[in-house]
Figure (cartoon, protein in one colour):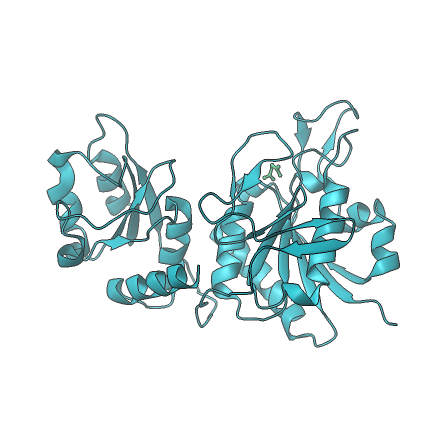
Length: 331
Ligand code: SIN
């Protein structure tokens, strides 16, 4: 029988990182090795799968910008359109892995499995987690039951939805989880166990933007004032995501300013800062009346990606709110 064909797409990160000694696991240079070199550390990969490797990017993910997503999107679409390819694996740094996963989840319309994977320890460390994570990611990408689930993230034996996953620890190999939503499944020794039936969020009808709009995140804290938001507006922000206190609350003193932004042509969304839970529309903000978007339990950096995609595709506030509601409905 023919081996499944996998497209492996390299972007750098710690999974391709190198340190000065095998005993060093936190002080290293990400994106030091090519993806081909990383694949070669796991001989079983080429025994089990027919592997094609491309490397559109080679950087630490803290340097990833929306412009990089365009190159990645192109590479992913080449694999999506190749009828020989069964599944796609993207290796990525962990710092912004959840943002790239959200971007692909919401911008690639395919039933093929797309799996993002990274590592918390560099490839040179005694305790490197990259090889096992990569093998697991390939297992999932080659699996027929991974189809129709959108973009997935595989880390430390767990399979997460690209939309809900987040990095929660700075160094542990068990850094990723999906608060509220939970993991979609587990993978161990080439066996995949799902906890839920396949479901896919509605993706945008992708047109590569010539330029991305500017969308910023304003983080709240005790004593916060309007300075950051005013600066973002002066810098040309077309959208601002407010990472608010508690149920996306903000000091009473600057609600009027915030509520005035949509009428000035700046889309705004209310999200919760650092904690989980579904933000509710409350009378204090009169969200619908002022055109303020809300996105339930989605965190600010993921809502920013929805605004980026929506604005880049010419959607207005109500259309973006409808899309958010459909995304949340798909779960
Ligand atoms: C990065 O995000 O590229 C550095 C950190 C990591 O990959 O774990």
